[in-house]
Length: 463
Image 1 (cartoon, rainbow, N blue to C red):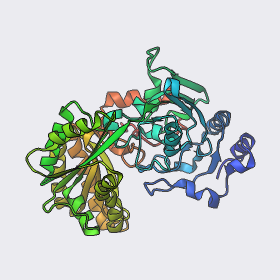
Image 2 (cartoon, rainbow, N blue to C red):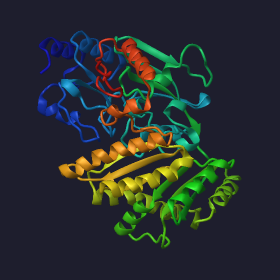
Image 3 (cartoon, rainbow, N blue to C red):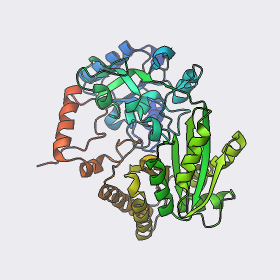
Image 4 (spheres, one colour):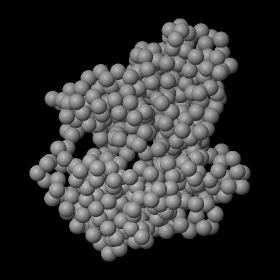
């Protein structure tokens, strides 16, 4: 239950139709795509910056946590409202404030979906490079909060690389503007990049100036099939070592291929142990030559086939294998555990080999796919969370997966964030000095600890 005084403050800050307080009305906003849940104390739907300021100040005055939320597509529990927190839903702050082709920028509110931005920018011949799988429903605010990127990051970078400025509200209730509207600027510390990926623990983003990129004139799609993951990983290294950078370089391991084959016969070569989906973009007069260079680099020992698509029908045919994977996984394990880890590209074979070993040791089927061009691998543990024995094995297996990733000079998350799910593993990757400095930064932005407490950073060790 919210304190009566806070309830009154929230009601004073928002119109009646922008505030939910009945438990049954708030319930759905206690979830995200991690399937974890906690009941919110209230749900507030801000529509303008001033309302966010008022909500932060009200929660700070009463020492009640405030959780900023988009559409709840995150997978790490980062927007689950612990301890009866107020959920600040930003889904109604969905204005496309400005598309400026002359300066290649867009200015948007956080509730704009990735797809809506792409469509608006596309009408002017531009796109925003980050393109998570959930682009149709995920919000720009969520993309920034997690630094979610998607396949195009291998060539075009992440939200940190494609965001110029932010307007935010700190945990003090202060309005903070960061960054510039120009592509160069070195005045002061780079607070924009600090806030991106901070999962709403430092400030609430209410507006963003985004860097747009011209749409390519042409694109080519290739599918390369290999006898094993080692061959595919060598091909990835060869592709990334030549001058043409693909705009997407995705992979599936042998277990994923077999799962798709069992779900749907897609005509892959016999003995396929790994698959790469590759896209190359550029000018119309150069894209074919670029695709041939990439294909030449992909033709290494162990390749079974390389297909180059030119028509839309051929592109759809080649992508059919990858698109069939998610339905196949849902059919086999609708409540699978999906982790996104990153290792150096050259260490992908060692990661996949280690995952095969862990699969046998723990008796858990592991399916791997993801963004091979930057080593961002989605590790899927096919388990039933309602089976206590499976979950005990999965917990031990996941612990070993993270240890393996760190031994390979990797990192625990590439784009899904930390939230609750990975919080207690963070101290394995970050040293005590780094964690202490980060906690100090948190206190400067949010001295009372009201913004998404209990997420991202592990609590300090007790003496």
